Length: 238
Image 1: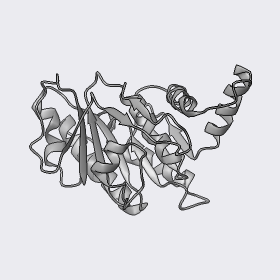
Image 2: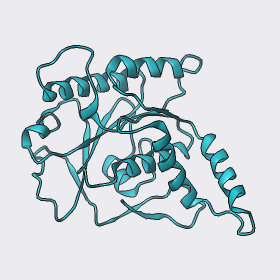
Image 3: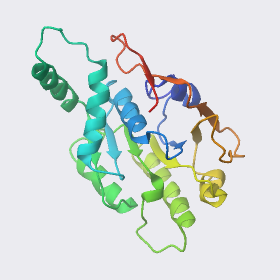
């Protein structure tokens, strides 16, 4: 593994680890539990000791914390004699100790993302090892653009600049659309290093012609090994 392992076998084999200065895009249709996948990715990295800035644009910070707790708690195997409330308390303490910063921006742009990074890294330049954006299509720009495609193209460039400036990998998620034009920025962008697409066999949406795109069947189990010492390492997406 050349970069940071995600703990998700399919992604690790696709990306060979998340590397400094690289921009990765992960696509899923809206029917998939993207938030759950993001939480699994965040936990897979954070439990390996890496700091994460997670920009959650869909709902609230509390909502993402619930996803993180449910997945984390799934892997925790406490003594059966412990009361349920004690198990929950232990899970919350352990989860709270993980280096995950969650930002639930009403609107996210390059300037607000940069502001968050500067605040977190003010005392420790290396506090953040990975930036995750949950839906780049909802990301704004600091300037006027004529179309959503141009907005996405501009943000892909700016996210690539953040990856290089802060020497971190950046992972952004996006939903594929039945309208091919909505996929054009991802099809053509020279700033994206690698793309993985979670796709159902029943999915009739078009597939990228972009070279090197990896298709991951959603019928497969996401082989998630967040904690090597725990026994349950298979979680089905969704």
